Amino acid sequence: MLSDRLVELRKSKKLTQQGLAAKLKITRSSLSQYEIGNRQPDYETLKKIADFFEVTTDYLLGYSNTKPVVKEEKTPYNVTDDPDLQIAFKEAADFSEEARRQTIDFINYLKEKEKAKGRKFPNSSDK
Image 1 (spheres, helix red, strand yellow):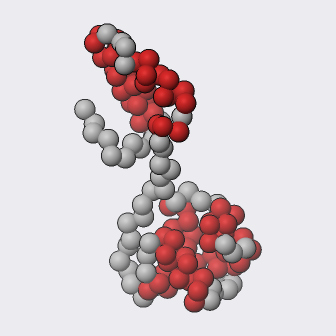
Image 2 (tube, helix red, strand yellow):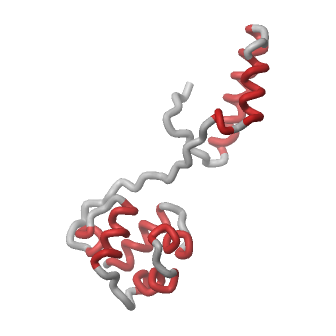
Image 3 (cartoon, helix red, strand yellow):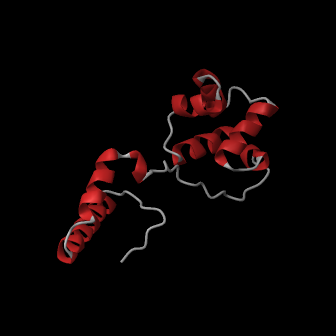
């Protein structure tokens, strides 16, 4: 049960075994052994896995069938960290009303293209 749930949770976060092992600070070979059911993690490692995936240890061990809601990993993006965007926004402040509207329309166009490729935009209002 643990092995199946561990594989499912790892794949839901689009992580490789190496990637998850690094995040959990365990070896890839240990994780591999957990996933194929040859070994069981110790209590501390089990707790780390549960905390990482925001599930209970009962869920991991099969004592609970309440399926967790796995949050998609998001990397926060701060516009102030990108000098090119800062320059672009400063320059856009001097645009005419029509040019600002065209800029917003173009950004929305690019956003729709990204959505068509399967990219999700959290906290955005779809117009």
